[in-house]
Image (cartoon, rainbow, N blue to C red):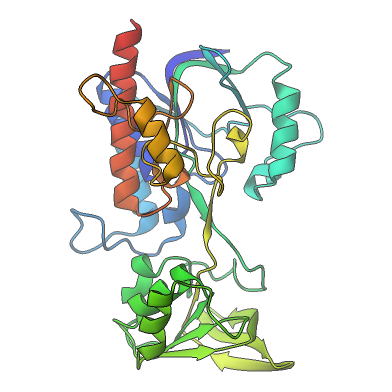
Length: 354
């Protein structure tokens, strides 16, 4: 059994930033990377909008640098996956094993019911890790449409973040799949770099806000294919075609890029019965910009009217940072900043417990 002051669950910008700050504070954190070490940036071709990199940097290289920096200050990076937690009392209990009949695929595919079963079985056994404080930084995953070629061409013409990758499609032929605010926002972002943007939507009317609809429908560089279903993404080294079904007929469209914009989901199934989550599954902290987040913030006000430990969840001693709690921004830079804030909150909280 491992005993430690601080456990960090997740290895994206939030997790590693938290690790850098916590290890510099001599808290000796252990960071568990999980099944997708490095988070979403591992599938981002080039990161251009993170401060300090004027020439950009490849997503995987950026994550390796964060890992190296965290290890430099003493973070122990553990490649295992946290498979269950018990936050009912301190010290907190965590598991890295699997009960018979289960595997990491339950987490890789985010099968909530199976993850809950794993937790129920493991909490009846001795924990693998005990920690005084926990920082949750498990991030979020882009929703998939589940068509052939979608996963195969991620980073090679398929993207889930127009803000991240639009500049790489300058003067290219691109498609955006979706009809909500995210999709329309992606189309507008892409239109700054190319005049050949087409939205593919399965209905005959967007579900996005009226303001976003008006902007897109009036935009000369954005076209819309209504009542259209994406069926397949094809290519060789990169994307070359998008296959859609429209009015019962299959059409093959030349394409340089396909942006899947059907929303994101927080990776929080592990904590469903341990912490308060909002309706979308985001871990609730004062950084959750919602009515629930506002109510939690009021509970954390001190005598000076200031929110103490904004990254603390509804369980004292458990903190959250990055996309798993961020319903608004979901950017690498905001995740990193929130991770640093979480580590500072943990440091201050632990001092008060001494």
